[in-house]
Picture 1 (cartoon, helix red, strand yellow):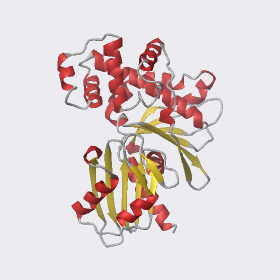
Picture 2 (cartoon, one colour):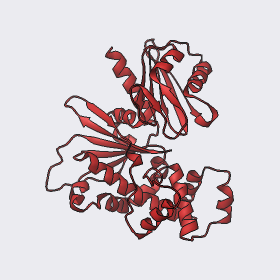
Picture 3 (cartoon, rainbow, N blue to C red):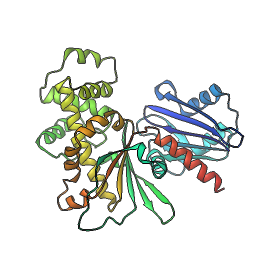
Picture 4 (cartoon, rainbow, N blue to C red):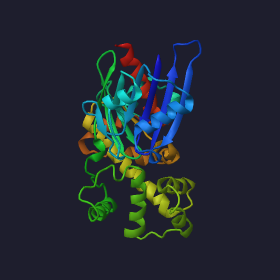
Length: 336
């Protein structure tokens, strides 16, 4: 079987080619920066040319950061439109599938072993047994998404959502001030506008411009030519800048609260899985603030004890969406 699979995010596209119908497995993979291309077809063309892969392929599956409706998608944070039909024609391949990126991650979750995950919050026994085998997977990167893994007895059925676009609800006085500050700039303040790469920089600007925390001159200069989220996170992890530390502390507080909100939308559950490009990079902060994370996650009034029972696991492999697309491609091609 000749498979092309990938994860098309708001920033990067990760592609992998697999051929397992010969004596030795062939595997090629490469990551592309989306800003260098006008369409996903251009990315795929370069990938196939780079590795000398001939068309047609047996099956293509791309996990995409946006809602897939009737085989088409307009990416939420990237000006690319895709349809399965257009990709099928361009790739000379009959079997082409577009799936939501968090759905793809959901397909990969059951195959992961414990070494691929870190426990951010332990589940605790409560008065009621945790009988559900359903789960939720939540991803933060260029944007925020979530998917519900529903157990059907022999396999999971995975439902996508656009949870990142629900309204942000502040949890303390500083966050009330944050919401008011953001509402002066936009009509709708979504959780994605804070829990994303650009959200980290937004929080940094809030603490600098609205709260008045001083900005280190060296960091201010570095922000002009570096990825803000990465730079701020690195200084927060190093513990060498109070403004960056406060930014990430607030980010984690909001992160935990929103994860608890999303878990309640799909409750009852057996676990919450965190994926995406940001969480693995700040895992040391998540581990050091485990207790605070658990408190914010469970602070849901009458549902506090229910959420205490749920474990929250961080998937450290940021290619889980791409790997899920491979699993989806294999499953659906073999079912033809």
